[in-house]
Length: 431
Ligand code: PMP
Image 1 (spheres, helix red, strand yellow):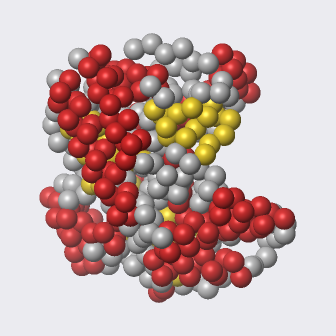
Image 2 (image 1 turned 45 degrees about the vertical axis):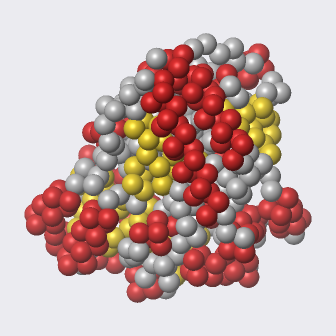
C-alpha cells in the first residue's frame, strides 16, 4: 500500500529531523513502526485532524487518549482562555486545584486524597515512590507489555513505543534502577501466586494497566484482578491501577468502577487534564499522607496544579459528569469492533478483535491476545500496510499494532460505518 505524503509534511519532517532526535518530541509519533513520514498537524476539530497539507483525517488516537469530548470543544477552550488571561502560573495554591481534586475524589473509588502532577509518567513515578516509602519495601511487580511512562524502574518489558521498536530495556536505565522490578506475564494468575510466595514480604507494590492500552487493547480477566487484590492485601503490598488511559474513559470512575475492584492507589493522566499537561496520583488517605509536607516522601513540581491545565481538566470532568457519554461510546465501540471483525473475516485476514468501551484493537493474529507473548505474534508488516491504506482513506489510526484506537463523543455512527467500510476496502487489498 503506497501513500503520497503531502509535500509540506515531508519538508517539515526533514527540517524537524535536523533539530530534534528523530524529528519528534515523543517516539511513537514518528511513525517508525509503520515506516514512513509522519503527518504534521495544523489543527484539530471535533473528531478530525487537519494536516499542514490541508488534508482531513478522522482521528482514532485523540492525542493517545485525552480527547474524549473531541478536539477544541468550545467550553474547554473558553475555560483555558479565561484561566490564561488571569496569568499562566503562580507557584502558589488556588481554589481551582481543590475543585479538580474534589472531582477526582468523587469519581474514582480508590482515591481519598490526590496530588496533581504534570504527566502520566510523573504520576506513576511518584506512586511507586510513595508505595515504597509507605511500606518500607523495595520490590515492585509490573507486567510485560504494560507501559507506565518513562520511569527508570518501570522501563522494563514496557509496551507502547518500547515494544513497538523492540527495545524493551532502554540504555541509560541502570541495573540498579530496574533491579527491584519483577516482571510477570499479564493475566497469569499462577505467576502472581508464585511471586508472592517467593517475595511476599519484600513487595512494595504491584502496578498494572487494568485494561492495557499499550500492547493494543487487552483487558485483564476478573480472575486475574481478584487474585491481585487478594495477594496484595494478604501481603501488605500496595495495588496500583495505572488508569492513565482508562481513567474517565471506560467509566467516570475508570476500570476500577467498571470491574468493581478497588486498588489502594491510582494513577491518572490524559483525560484528567482535558488535553493539557496534567496527571494525578491518589489513593487511600493513610497512604497519601506519607507525601511531603504531610509526610516524608518527597514529591514536588513547579508547574504542578498549573491553573491553565487545571481549568481544562476540571471543565472536561464537569462535562463528563453532567452529560456522561459512556453509554454512547460503548455502543460505538461495539459497532466498530463488530464491523472491523466482520470486515477482516470477509477479507479472509487472520485476526482477533479486542475491545472494551471506547478502546478497540484489530490484532493481525488469529489467536486471542491476553498477554505480551500473544501480542508479539501479530503480523506487524500487515498492520503497517493496513495503517497506510487507512491513511489513504482519510482515517488516522494509532501508528502501531500495540496501541488501542480511541474515539470521542463527537464521532458518529455514520463515521464508524465509514471507517468500517474503509477498513474493509484496505483489508481486501491486503488479502
Ligand atoms: N501510563 C499509561 C497506562 C500510559 O498509557 C501512559 C502514556 N501513554 C503513561 C502512563 C505515561 O503518561 P505520559 O505520556 O503522560 O507521561
